[in-house]
Image (cartoon, rainbow, N blue to C red):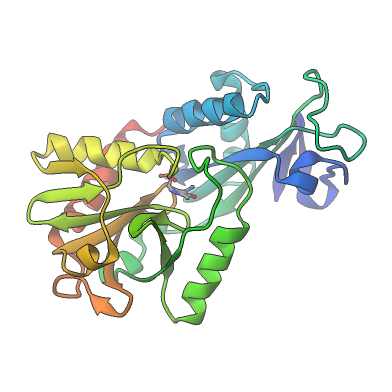
Length: 284
Ligand code: PMP
């Protein structure tokens, strides 16, 4: 596999990052994941905008223009023959040459790494026909979840808790309300109404969330952006999650209780279809 490191396209075995890189020592960096379908990037613009915002919130200078980011993404997709899969991008505060809590001088070059993962048939995932089961766990993450940092230890622990419980993911709960999934935004459906937590620093501002809510409104579904509880999810008609890599994924069980009929719902299925159809059309 060919990966991108600081301006160079190199075989993955030859890629090198300093042991003093702040991404490695302090999780001082941000990332994006963009899906690829039929060799094209899904919602690239959305990911570029969020990347710029994450970097700006951490006072890391954006090393590339949107056009340059696009060119690097396309080059990697081409070099690795990616038909369906994803491009991972990470920018860290770079290598100050020593370990120090204070940020290095602002002219320290950020470290830029991109790689691809091939996932043949990504959009035809059979799991979308049966849906995910989730458990709930406390949300003990930090207070700036709107910044897409590489600080992913707690989400990883959540995923492992889910695996140990024999389910697919964990929904995080804070002050009695669901914030989001370990790596996705969470929704419930009541009748024709889609309910999801409003944007704030409590959750990541999902790129897929923005697109799906737009399509839902265009399809005359009602969207209510408010908090909901695990009990409300258990008694909802449907539930689902969204993310750039899972698109729209139905959730059929929460903490052992079936959601609605316990099968994949009509609204989630429809939204998945609309999302994939529209985003394929707009892919670059
Ligand atoms: N919340 C969290 C915590 C995430 O990690 C992700 C995926 N990166 C999302 C939500 C979904 O965001 P997106 O739709 O942009 O992939």
